[in-house]
Image (cartoon, rainbow, N blue to C red; front, side, top):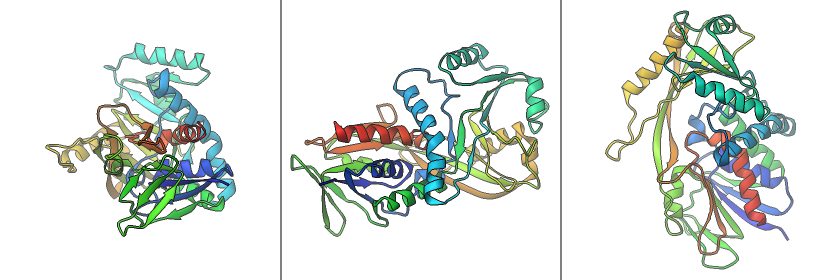
Amino acid sequence: MSNSISIIGCGIVGATIAYELSCSNKYTIDVYDRQQPAQAATGAALGVLMGIISQKVKGRAWNLRKESILRYQSLIPELERVTGLKIPHNCQGIVKLLSPEDDLAKWEQLIATRKQQEWQLELWQASQIAAQLPQINPDFRGTAVYSPQDLQVDPVALTNALVMAAKMKGVNFHFDRSIESIRADSPDSCDIFTPDLLNVASDWVIVTAGLGSTSLLSPHAPIEIQPVLGQAIQIRLAQPLGDADFQPVIIKDDVNIVPCGGNEYWVGATVEFPVDGLVEAQAECLERLEKIATDACPDLAKGTIVRTWQGLRPRPNHRPAPVIDRVGSNNRILVATGHYRNGILLAPASARIIGEMLLA
């Protein structure tokens, strides 16, 4: 008899866990979300997977990134094959522009470390930047680091593909269905309750509800998740930036310029912390984002802004992101939440850890 699992939250993390667990015949899986899939932090993400180019080189932070990048190399084609869906993604890497004020020695050391770890990073001088990326401002006098093995993926398309693939393997999804509370009174099961007092008993409950995790988990563990707002824009141009055949993600001063097809580019995202407990979009933050992007690639200023959007990222307080743990008196409540700005990147590794917890 298979064990029953209830997953609360169907952003990228919940959907990935559901799919990966569905590849085993050990579980009966139900997924609950108060909205449709990928509507919260996932729906606002840009999907830039900064693993190899990250400054993390050891320990949990690096291992999660490395594992996830490796899994994405097989996961995206696997999902496309299983579902027949096209998942827009960019395998042309990430170029991070460095200003003269950046610590070049730190990046040279990272390149050497990655080589030892059998990953690729390249240091580009100004002449190579100009040759490879003619869209970059000719006044730019810095260097760049190119990471050909990092990638970018459309988060919503990816999540929808995960949901479809999981459904095909028997996972039951319950959208527009809120969960009000979790009880773990029994030593061998958990109960979840909906606002209309429907009770669902499961062998395991996995909470992946982002900002909603705090209230759900408060009776079991003090996991405080803080909202951090991010704003982004989508710009449409008459023609692609630079070379149409080489369209990597470009990063300057923590601003991402992301090709998304059809001569359109996502630009984002701001990082805006609560002020006096309130989270409100700041116009000056969006203006700064646009200025950095157009300074880096002046042709962006010729485009039309076709969309502006924002979302709240779940950032854990007083502990590192993400939170992947057991909670509750019977250890049958698992949590994978608080991924902050790396939910898309770290979803595969998070799913693997949850799977191991279930078997422990």
